[in-house]
Image (tube, rainbow, N blue to C red; front, side, top):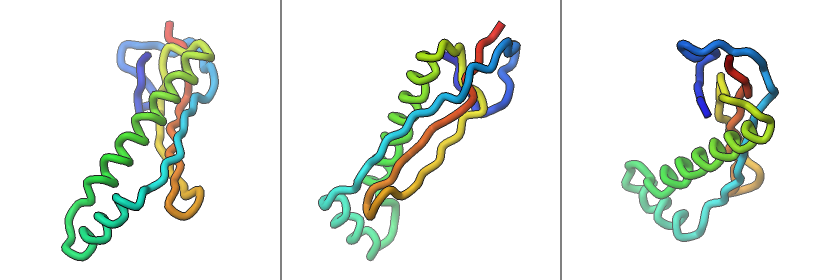
Amino acid sequence: MIISTTETVPNKEISQIVGIARGSTVRARNIGRDVFAGLKNIVGGEIEEYTKLQAHSREQAMQRMIQDAEKIGADGVINIRFTTSMVMQGASEILAYGTAVKFK
């Protein structure tokens, strides 16, 4: 599966647009991370627990997007994007989406 943030892939010709592939996950913070984040907020610096949480969430959303593309018979997903939105206090959705295509 070829994944790209661009509209084209070098040396590949798109023969068909299959549809939109998407994958998402909703993640919530936990009390332990929040306490540590509050302390970090006082002294400053990166809140590594949240960085790791976001990285894991993006990866899971992207894997789900790839699975969605495979279900509809795509060879690749181009022009992929990520977006996030707050679902409720302390919980966010990460959405990965792109154009599922077949190559010649």
